[in-house]
Amino acid sequence: MAMAQASPQAAGAALGAFTPRPMKLSILTAALQELTPRARRDADPDLAIEEWLEFAREIGAPNIELSAALHPSESDVPAAALLDPVANTLDLRAPFSAARAARVRRAMETSRVGLSDLAYFDNMLAADESARRRKHALMLRVFDAAVLLGTDAVTGFVGRNPQIGMDANLGMFEEVFVPLLREARARGLTFRVEQCPMPGWNATDSWHNNIAYAPGPWIALHRICERHGVGDQFRIHYDPSHAILMGQDSRSVFQYLRDTGYDFLIGGFHVKGQVIDARGISAWGYGGQTIERGDRDGDRLRTDPAAQQNAWKKQTVFSEHELPGTARHDPLAYLQNRSVDWLDHQLAARELLRIEPQRTFLVVEHEYPKARIQDRSRLAPILSASLAFTRAIDEAAAAMYALQHEVLPAQGIAVQGFGRESYRS
Image (cartoon, rainbow, N blue to C red):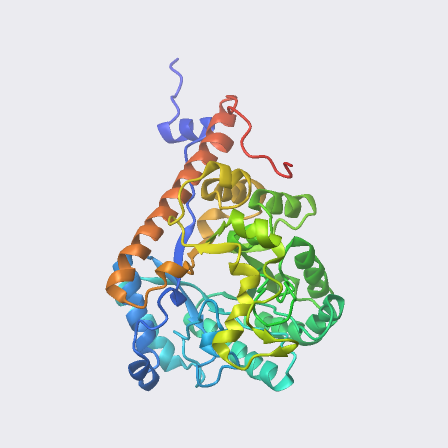
């Protein structure tokens, strides 16, 4: 009697089918802050979103991370004092409404560009109570806009009160940030914290001005959140440039999260690199420039906002942001953790974190100073190339992961070599 033959699909599944799972690509709209001239967008706020969606289609971005910020007329930090100017592509001087959301949704359908999340990067632990109240009010409007636009996540900072110590900031987080997370929970949202230490955010000598800067603090903050029933609302939007800035490597960061049982904390990724200048490290070390920066006269803060930007020499004296693909391929720099090894970054995320790659957003963030061009025609090919690089490197990682962790093991075939190792010193 003839045996029934298994279908090719069933046979493939039994042997371990090749099923790569790429991440979902997006781009932060702060990549081009003034795509729509201020005079036009102030009069018609949602025009900026419509035109950014069309620009995203042009450059090949399937999704955008929509940037919100205090309007320049309301901000407590002058633009001249910022290292990387923010963008209020999402203008929330007036609350977002169902009618505005319908208009944006129509533009998304027309452009066929989706929305990964909303982003508002500001200091939620600001020392000045009136400024903090204004920032929190805007964050709540961002939450409401996220609900109306159908996204489930908002990305931002925790921040720091620079007038008090780090342990006291944990107490302040519990007092003033946890209520924001309760508001996120009420709306079905997750708040994803980017881990930039923000060394030049103020003209003090403090390096860590965003207390959620590394796995140790993330875990301490998450434990506070768990005590208040908002642990599911607190997640990390990981950016490898900040790990490089602090002398870390992503594989070891992810391994530490796995070792401690917190490999669920990272919920999304910014794709931005950092290139370390060996001469700057030789002069100042990873603490950056501490004296004679030009942001202070003796112990007094200089009032000129352009002078205040010199506080960022804590960072820029030894490092420079990379737009993915703009830094040369440099194996030695990867091994020294002085530039992001993008392929290993994407492999390590799949190997060590509790993520579903196909549901995880990979958001290109453009802060490479030499290419911060406010000219659509010049910037478009730069961003197109970076998006293409990011897509290709992630697809390569997805293929390698599927082959090495699914296809070969299903057939009992060994994987070759060792790869990068965590905690290597």
